[in-house]
Length: 137
Image (cartoon, rainbow, N blue to C red; front, side, top):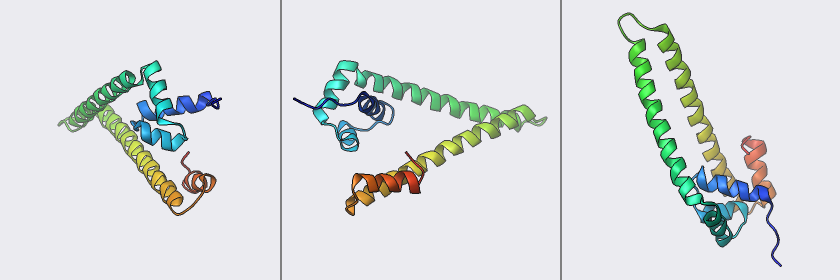
């Protein structure tokens, strides 16, 4: 009889596929779950449609955020100046920079973890480099 996979793994797989945009193969490698199992879960719960919807929504948010940034800087740079727009622009820019910084750190952690595995590190040691040294879970 096949071993039952914990619900947390299924939720993590769903997030990696829908939100992070990983392929079934990449999710399978990351979580040590069979690709066919992932495809069965995806079919049963409509992951592909939810992934398309998530991507579309994220794209709309990014477009609207970009338009907001342009409007705020335009308002801040008017001849009379708008201090609230300047403050709002600065705050939005901080958020954008923080998001980019987090993404860069996560990408670097992925590379470090993968490099550790390629050099013969076991799962625990590779995770140590990712979590303890780089502080990324």
